[in-house]
Length: 254
Image (cartoon, rainbow, N blue to C red; front, side, top):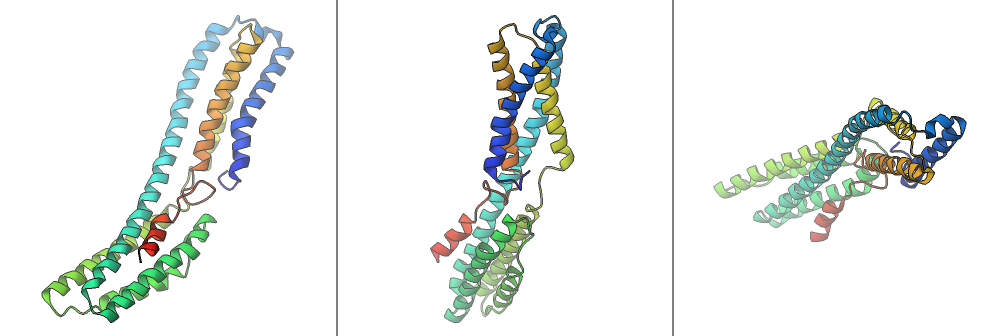
């Protein structure tokens, strides 16, 4: 579902689900008039309460987990940018030629991630082949830093540690690309929505407007929450996605 355009998912879930529920309810009430008499409201009300709670827990779980994953992916990009910025800043303790090489590597890495890797991730692809050689070059240039004093030796160690942080953050970011709710969970959400809305149709109110309002409201709420889950299901794919803004700010700083 995340591969669909966001606007089409919005129309389908936020507008289509309530509309379908209202039309189906009116058809059922006309086809079986007994549904509008309310003789079964005690049983229907109990079932709505049980089914509604179970489905609310499941839907809330999916939305919360999707948001936590989305937020964690954004934090990982921030950590990656922070490690990259620290590598460049700390290189100021070394001679001009070494600083220039580190600076060029940092800029090349940021451009490779923003220009090549981010579009690849937005297509669901796990990274870009242009970033690896840039990391290798940065690693070689960091190892070549002159450790000709105790202070510089300590700084070189700090630079290597920040490089490891950078590699770890990038690896964690790429791990988020294929993640998302499994198909079986989406199937459970769809079935749960049908059952929950269906029981709201069975619970009868003599006032047709109030019955329509109740069913439409339940379907609208479910549709909105499903839309939120769909929109943030994959952190780097779709119109609602984690952006490379932290890395762009690194380039702006330099």
